[in-house]
Image 1 (spheres, rainbow, N blue to C red):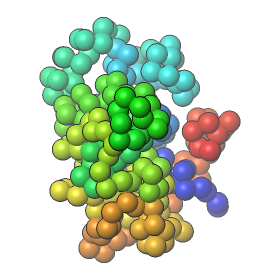
Image 2: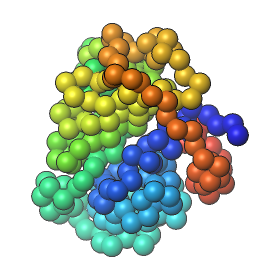
Image 3: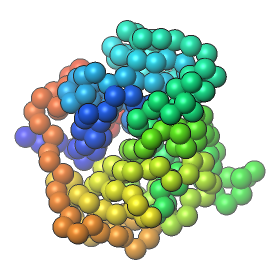
Image 4: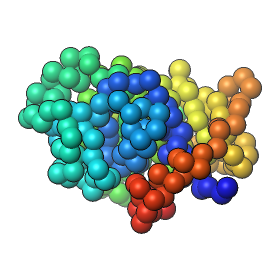
Length: 236
């Protein structure tokens, strides 16, 4: 059975939600991971999207945070202000699930600009949206992102979201836990430690006894490839 590193990353992200009840989902890669979790390890998980939807069970992957499919089967739809104030700031969110363009060794996230000059950046990104609020108010945060020296940097170009509640980072190369710094705890199948070091913009910290991520199962791959992303928009 063959699988890609992106598929391994998404599966690892979905498995991290086992036993969780309320998850505030950021746009991007977290969408496909939570969709897989709903169909496998966390069928009762209640998804929140910043557009004002609680308890979403979308029947397909959303194209944006305003996609009407997010309302499908939801428990409640409300103004964004109420969602953030009553649920997120009220301490009712177990886990925030975010992506990012950059992360540093402390877990700080950047989704705002690439480059030193905010007013004239190399790349201007979508910005915070609800990410900063999620990062500060969810009980813990999981980050899902692809890893390279451009994304794993010593210091983020712009600190969009603080890393104080980031507990786990899952990339296409491995899995990290976060205390004072990111610490590699697992390598994905077929990934070498040298590859991870080459894709990290600081001296890598290793957990005692780095393990290997369990590979995706045939059923997880079937759901990803046939039900969730047959056109491989997320899984490219």
